[in-house]
Amino acid sequence: KAGVTQTPRYLIKTRGQQVTLSCSPISGHRSVSWYQQTPGQGLQFLFEYFSETQRNKGNFPGRFSGRQFSNSRSEMNVSTLELGDSALYLCASSRGSPAYGYTFGSGTRLTVV
Amino acid sequence: QQQVKQSPQSLIVQKGGISIINCAYENTAFDYFPWYQQFPGKGPALLIAIRPDVSEKKEGRFTISFNKSAKQFSLHIMDSQPGDSATYFCAAVGSAGNMLTFGGGTRLMVKP
Figure 1 (cartoon, rainbow over the protein chains, first blue to last red):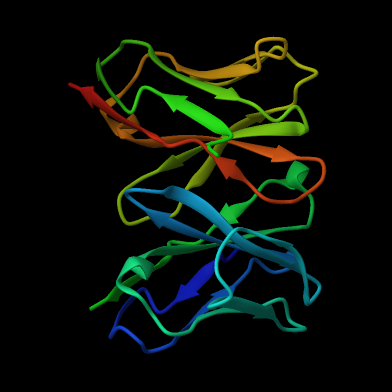
Figure 2 (cartoon, rainbow over the protein chains, first blue to last red; figure 1 turned 120 degrees about the horizontal axis):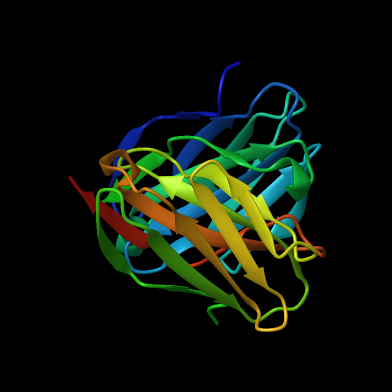
């Protein structure tokens, strides 16, 4: 059974640019969540999508956005990149309820220079 | 506002010893408490989870103890092994949303 696939694994962008990260969930999982991991702030929730609808949103500026497609794949976009956006971005998929648990991908390491 | 506080930040244990990591939460709406293990270069992996109607759950060498009245829960790793060296995160999920609120993490090193 394939796990959660995130692409690309590593990314270097320049301040002011925008970036799109991709996540393919486990087959059959309809919920995709995104988290930002930094040494200073730890793991912070960005947003969650279920059946193409955003169900929950964390406390991040509007520069962070996402979407989910009909095949449950999800993309996350960050516009006008800032140095502080450098982080490991993690995607987690689940069947839709916490009781089923969340499976994380290995993440995309974004470096903003 | 940090809703889940985790301690210690780092822990060194001898092989065969017991590793204990503690977490405390504030939001009484939390109703699902998982623990995740993360190795360098990997995403967090679910280790074990508990609901507040249970005071203890054991899976192999890993045990969660839960104290609902104190709003605290802990992870015990028995017979700790060098392969257990990783960062451990406690988390909580509320009935109102499907988002994980993580503790700050504990870096565990098990010395051979």
